[in-house]
Length: 291
Image 1 (tube, rainbow, N blue to C red):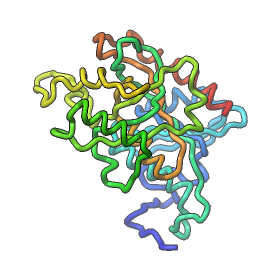
Image 2 (image 1 turned 30 degrees about the vertical axis):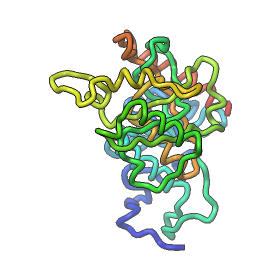
Image 3 (image 1 turned 45 degrees about the vertical axis):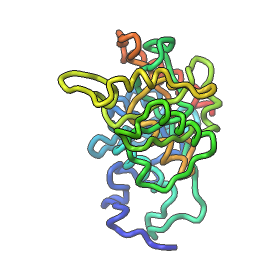
Image 4 (image 1 turned 90 degrees about the vertical axis):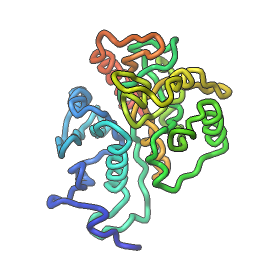
């Protein structure tokens, strides 16, 4: 087995992976990711016991238990570029032997669940509602740096999306990946389901106009109008497609769940986004703990 060089996988002086500052024994097989570092403690306060509290830069990790269920909560920061760091390092922690610097012969799948915030692209999905992403469709370019394949339905979805939006004229060619089926089936009642668009920014890429004009001013409307069979675009944010794409290639089960804090069709914003996130955490943790 080929050895992975020190420059490619950086392990710090305490035997932890570089950016996350987590050792293999400090990570649970069920991982909740949150964008905001301050949200880690808002999740772990519901744990019965916290074993490990770790931090490096914006990456904070708490590992503990709800009953007998061991769970890690990891902050990712914002954007697909940060997800590239987090997903690769989470995978390294379970599937690379840090002593020999070789890939383990028996690979271990993680359950990775994002709990975040998002903007609704449908009038009937109100602020403070919860959305589970059946697919993550990326209009950034992260997955183009990796070899990846799509099933037939995913190929058809991307083709229909490109035909409808004409984004190939101004953006990187979109990519798509599906939610982990083992996780998706647990999150049905009380959750909307649909395609989540992952954007590489918060303002122009999500159609917001402050002082700068947009190259594609009708893009958000086209997202709202998109329909392919039973599929529609429900929301957009900045991490889901990267989590789904990388996770799928690595053999992990991934799911993204969002509290809707803005409805871009109705131009509304949640009156208490913090409460919406807290309600999402409590509802989802109850399901995760019982899985």
